Image 1: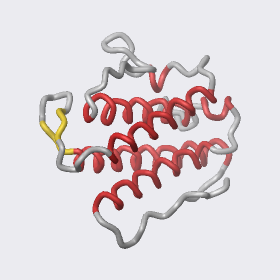
Image 2: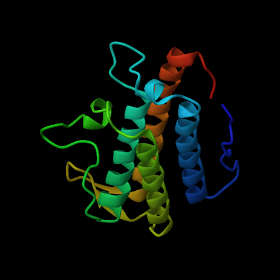
Image 3: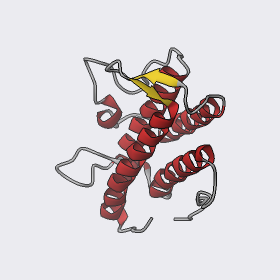
Image 4: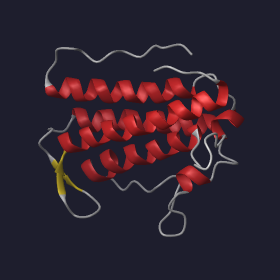
Length: 168
């Protein structure tokens, strides 16, 4: 694995810090997936969990699109990989046929769109969660950091189980 991640600036304003750490975590997920075959990316390597690296990428694509595209920007952004109530875990479950390159392209596009939305929006701007609670973009950024950090921990276990690779 080639670690090309950029460390967040150690001294920076709030926006720069939030964006830097979120990009670092996005890059960490990409690093965990680097160099694996399509089969390895689909592998549910830590039973009894049904998680896979590909499922994590698909899930985080949906999370990016939902929080930033739908909630913050107010765009009509339909889910790519799941449907409610019929297939609420499709992002994690339906992994047999998707084209890997297409999945990663969708994730990269979602991340780029999220960056654009955040750059154009005040951290004090608000959006509504699914439960109707109003939250700031700052809260959403912190939530996204938590989401990526948690799933990058899952990615650590998956990658180690797949090929023994460990580390950040």
